[in-house]
Length: 101
Image 1 (tube, rainbow, N blue to C red):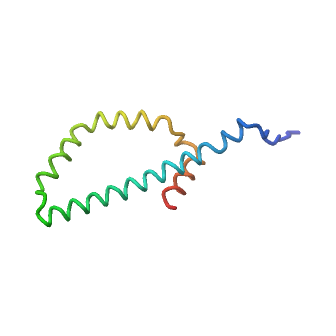
Image 2: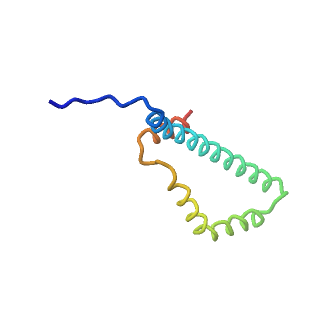
């Protein structure tokens, strides 16, 4: 006969259970806010170009330089993403809740 024991209620078990969804929620909230901020900046830049305060070349130049430094930024983002438990189902649930809330 196989008996299934319930998990213990130790502090370590509870923290291991709660940290991934909380991290997922925070990451989802940050991603949602970053997308909203990016959209607001894009709209502001389009308005400034339409009014004539900025020229398109003044906007495109920094964007092109950002894309040129992309590989270095991608390496740093990969390093930071390595700390997240993105293979955990509870992390993904927390990410979805944080993003769609």
